[in-house]
Structures are given as structure tokens and as C-alpha cells.
Amino acid sequence: MNNLSLGIMEVLGMSLGVGRHELREFFRGNESIMRLNYYPPCQNPELALGTGPHCDPTSLTILHQDHVGGLQVFLNHTWYSVAPNPNAFVINIGDTFMALSNGIYKSCLHRAIVNRERVRKSLAFFLCPAKDKVVKPPSVLLNKQNPRLYPDFTWPTLLHFTQTHYRADTKTLDAFSAWLPTTLQYPNH
Ligand SMILES: O=C(O)CCC(=O)C(=O)O
Ligand SMILES: [Fe+2]
Image (cartoon, rainbow, N blue to C red; front, side, top):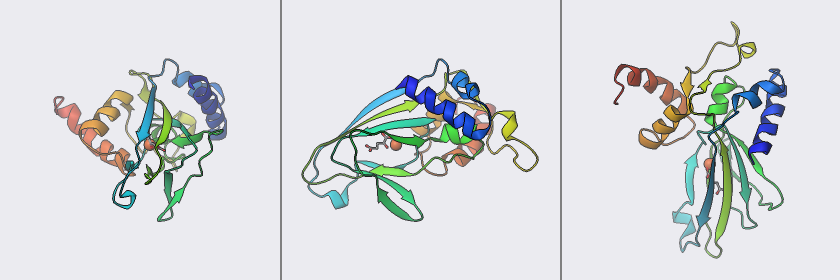
């Protein structure tokens, strides 16, 4: 998974015009997380969600769904189901990569619904930068027309923010950018 995520970073780096090695290098020694989600059957699936709407605060998510299905993404005011395919991964951009690409790649709002009959499992690998890496876009992505959108930060600070101050949604990076200067002023915040 780690190798695959770094390979995807090479492709994303090439698509951004920053070259093949820069992002792979950035994620060297990464602090990635693997999570198994287990969704039991639910008597009232229309009243419950398996995972509520959120954007992943991490950099890149590689998600494996089993054959049951339940992942949905939000696009143009509509929730779309992502067809389950146990032979494929779903690749999701997270907020940290949105910041790293200076907003060129966008994180996407998604959720998981439950159903009445069947257990569902999904496996998610989240690529996250090493603790001390400062998240800032490569300089080739910045110019007068494309100024910095987000401040410098490190992954543990964003993780702390989303775990204790804010439920990750489409506005996480904006809320984080507003909150960050207050923590520098009051470090125990
Ligand atoms: O179970 C799923 O399909 C989605 C899970 C998810 O979004 C997450 O773990 O961040
Ligand atoms: Fe997610």
C-alpha cells in the first residue's frame, strides 16, 4: 500500500509539473494509517449512516470496498454511489494533498451508508506526511495569479484540529487556516 501510494504521488507530481521525484521524496518516512471499517446490518438504514459526510484530512486514501457497496461521493449537490468492485481500489484526495497542490487537487466529500441485510467491510489506507514535514506547495505551483491558499503546517497539527476542534468537512482547511494563528499565540489551546 505504501509503495502504491508513493507511485500514485509520482503520477500526481508529473501531472502537476513538479516532476516525478519531489512528492515521493516529500512522503519519505510517512506516518500512514490503515483502518478497517466494519458496518453491521442496520434495521433502519434510512435513519442511520455508517460514516457521516466528511473529507479525509490525510493526503491520499486508497480504499478497498468489499462486494456489498455503501460508499457515496457528493458532486453537484447529489450523492452518487461508488459501485463496489473488490478487484479495484478507490483513490481519494485528502485535505493535506489539497494544501500541497495549492488547491489544484480537491479533497472530496464522501460518506458510507448502511443496509438492512448485509455486513459491509472496507479497508482504508491513508497516506500522511512524516510528523516534522512542513506542508507547503512546491514553488513552481505559485505565482502572482496563484498565491498561497493555505499556511504552512505539519500533519500532526491538522490531525489534532480534526480530532479535537472540528469535524472534517469541505471547509476544514479554511477553518484550520483561521485557527492556526490562534494556537501559535496560545500554544495550549
Ligand atoms: O467505508 C467506506 O467506504 C468509507 C470509509 C471512509 O470514508 C473513511 O474511512 O475515511
Ligand atoms: Fe473517508
